[in-house]
Structures are given as structure tokens and as C-alpha cells.
Image (cartoon, rainbow, N blue to C red; front, side):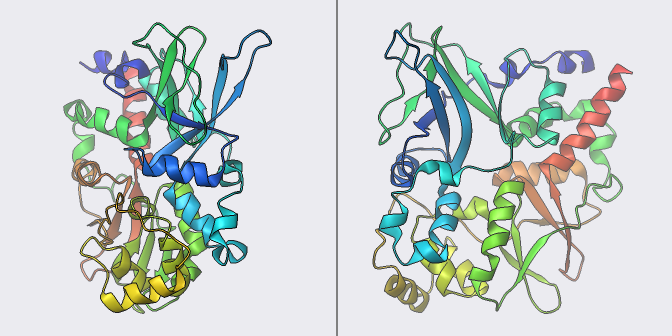
Length: 350
């Protein structure tokens, strides 16, 4: 059974994954915004394509990054942009791309499961994998205002694998990781105590840098009171389901009021009026459904498998760790979980 798991390649994890939709690096932020609003995914891949000298098709395309609504929101919150969002949206999408190399990485379909885990632990968030194209024709990358599966010579399309995909795959074979999966996250040493926080009463704008960092780290910003008690969170996973009007909320409200604003129950009317007064230049989209700002928590003695199930069920890549008095002590991330599985799998090889 263990040998069978070790024999899996990334192509096995791609089964049933839809072709990756894309925008070209020549697109503007406004084009990216339109693409996100018309997509079922919270992230859009950005591609750079080299034309060959004898063809008008994009034969050599390479994914150079990914963007989501949070990237756009943080960009619009900058002092020079919040007063003139229409002008800011004309900037090239390249200004939103992460400066950290290797966040998006192309891999061959024959990469092993262990190789994929190693890449993720070392910083890759999305593995771009070619998949077999169901059509015989090569497609061009469409105009910046629309989405299209990206293909290259040979008719291949692409999908991408995330940390969640790998964790979900490992969870389906969790019995092979006994007794490790039943150990507490505290005993496994995977509680990260370096966390991002903001006081409940502080201006939400003070969390802007932390929000950007949490997006890069695939974590979140804890909203705490004066005693360190976890009240809630400002999460990129929540903000990714919002629209660009949240930029005005971040620059106007307190951290606590921002949580109320993005809560799925709907923001209080007085808060909404304040944001609308600041955001007359924004057009609200009904496509985005607000997700709850309530934090997902566990305790140090929680088992690894229980925390995995929590995160997978709620579609996040982290879980906050709190004590019995609700003070936050750290966070458990998918990357930390994957290190445990990596060590377990490598022990099977030795």
C-alpha cells in the first residue's frame, strides 16, 4: 500500500482538474478584475507567450504568476490609488505579481508525489502541470478581456495543483500514516508561533501590510483584543470572495468593523453607509458572496488528522491554535503538515 502511494505522479492528482484559464501579461488590472469576476476560481494565472517567427499562434507560453482579488484590493488601498481607482486599474497586471521567485512552478507530469511535496515545502504554491488536450487544435490565448485555456505546441492544456490538492490526496490515504496522523500538532512541532495580528480597535488600514504578507504566506491576520484573545480574522481567503469596494472599507473602518463588513451575515447599515460614502467610484458586483470572518481554530492537543479535516472542509490552508482561554498561541499551515508527511514517506524509502 505504501509503495503504491509513493508510486503516484503529479499527473494522478490532475485527474478531473479543469484546464487552467489565463490572462496574458500584457493585460491591465482592469482586465484582470473582469476576468476574476467571470471566473469560478478565486485566482487567475498570468502567462507570457513567445510567438515563433512563422506562426501567429502562441507556441511557447509560460505561467509567470497568479493574481486574485486580494492583490487588486491591496493595490487599490495604496495612498496614490485609493483616490483615483479608475486610473489605478489601467496599470499593467505585472505590478501585482509576486516578487518571490518560484511561487508558481512548471513541472513535468511524471514528477513524483514526493518531488511535488518538496517543491511546495520550498515555496511553490501552485504547480503548473500539462494535461492532455481533449481537442486536436491548438488554441490561442484570447484577448485580455476574456479567459481561455492556455495551450502550446502539441495541443497540451494545463492545470495547476495547490497545497490543498496534495493535502486532500494524502487525506484519502491517511491510514497509511498511522500512528503519525493521530499525534497532536503540539507533539509534532508544527505550531508556528510567528503570527500576524491586529488589535480589534485599530484602523484596518494598519493591517494592509500584514494582509499582503498573509496572502504570500497563505495564512491570515488574527484580530485580537488587548488580552490577546482571538476575536476573528482578516483572511485573504475571505477577501478573495469580496469585490474591489472592500478597498474603501479597509481604508475607512477599524479592524473590528471590517470583520463585520465582510461577514456573510451582511455588514451593519451604518458601516455600509460609511463605506459607500468613501467608495462612490466603485461598482459593486453581486457575483461575490461574502464569507464569514470568524476564525477557524483548534487546540495544541488536536490531532494532525483532525486539523487536516477542519482545513479541507472549510477550504483554507491554515488553522489558528488557541488555548482554553481563547488566547492565540500560533497557527498550523499546510506547509507544516506536508513536512510531517514528507518525513514519513522518506522513512519508507530508507
